[in-house]
Length: 484
Image 1 (spheres, rainbow, N blue to C red):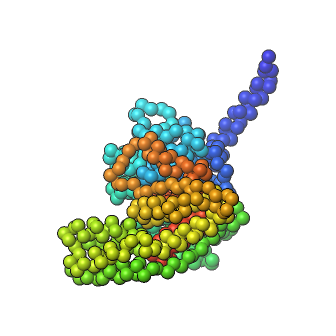
Image 2: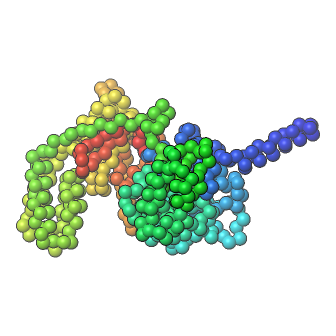
Image 3: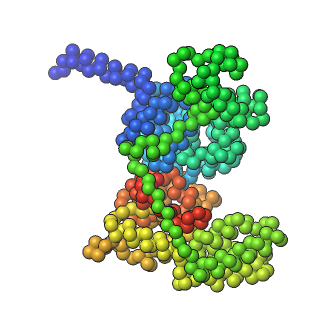
């Protein structure tokens, strides 16, 4: 038989906890199923306690931007029982977002818009190709808009977001690679994050972002010992005497709604990356085929304005298969090789004559797996032909890995860039995601070979070895640290 007094105490305690959860800055953010790092708690608290939730989380790769977004989303959903959110992501990230929402956020996102008479919380997860129209990005339907890697969306979607951003009550952008150096992208970003501020600046200047930067510089100067008259000249009151420079900087900074955390800010708490560059000397065949490609480029630059010569120059450095496929395309297109330069280059594409970058990669993999044959390694190539080439060639050279007595068969997974025309629903994408990455994530597969765009944003923190095969700069780089 229950004790009424104890029941009353428990009820009061439950009510107190509910009220505390609703009024606290973090609210239900800490209920996400993930170990929260200090920078994540600080970032989430900064967002939730700001005057408006309109932020770009631009933390370095692997620092948990998705987790922070889910923490913020869960806090808002607890504050508002009928909260509606739209999560817009690139196609290749949709399966991972679905998994993160279910396993960490404790909810399953839906793939359809809420009904007009719906009176419960609603979270929709969608990638661009699923939208019937960009008008589905509707601030009249959703309270919160979350966009992951906005620069990878089609231009009409970015424009739609820019046009209606100010009407969303809450907005979160996520990316590890914000294009702040691109003037148009930077202006669009500021317009999305602070539409009213940018509109006000645009009344006085055709380059409002420059006006904001100039104002920021002036305020930084006045913060030291500016007089009341000087502050009045720029339309502001003299700050209170005890106002810190940090507070003034945060209030007037051009990028005040951009949050950027770096690993080196938390050296004792976050795994640090150690970069190693590996110089690779090309073989004679590689030099010979590149010489023929350069001759074709020089000759075509004078007479052919339709061929993407820059792309050809990049592909020539990637892999024999990538160059071979590109040459076949160019030679079939109106016979665009009148001098026979590309045909001459094909005579030096026999892999049997050596591949300097492949050999250096294999040597590096041997060194890694001789220490630990279970070590997870991510190799990032630049295009699908190179991914296919590596996936087919590496197992031929390394059918087994590990030191003597501890050898095990090499298991390899592949993640290619998806064809833009190849669309499917999230369930199909999740099956594809699990098929290509499931073994690598759970530790059964040691090697993942991924194309450049395919690996962006994937949760691969368990892979401590990350190797980039790049066609510009050092031919081969490796990173010993957390990969993501």
